[in-house]
Length: 142
Image (cartoon, rainbow, N blue to C red; front, top):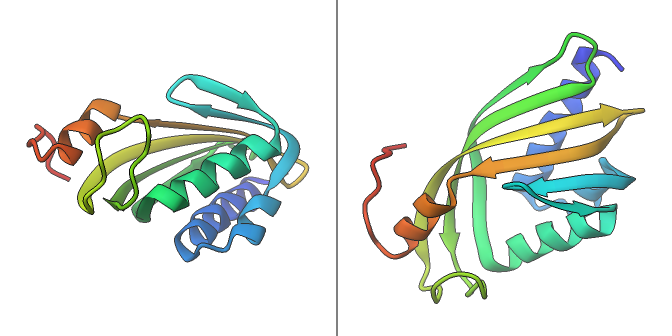
């Protein structure tokens, strides 16, 4: 797979995410893909679908300032961006939702094979998110 093709797949991922085009978004993943979220790993396309649907149900997020980089052969793609969101519905692992705004810097790593995402890894500062939802300031100004 070429570097350009892999980059296009990742660009489509963020476009479809921002536009809430779930069918198109989910079609970008292989059936046996791997999903890592801050070092927690799940296996299979169904797990990614569950995670994204859960995210849409609790958070209204949009991706901004997207930067995409790819390895020369196109197998590995990295994306760095700012997520601006509103915490709308209570997530059982967090405090009650009251439409709190938040802004996070996020890094995602993708592995692409045969035109599909076979692995997606997402990393962000969970403590910063928790602080912002509680209304506390963080040292980061994004």
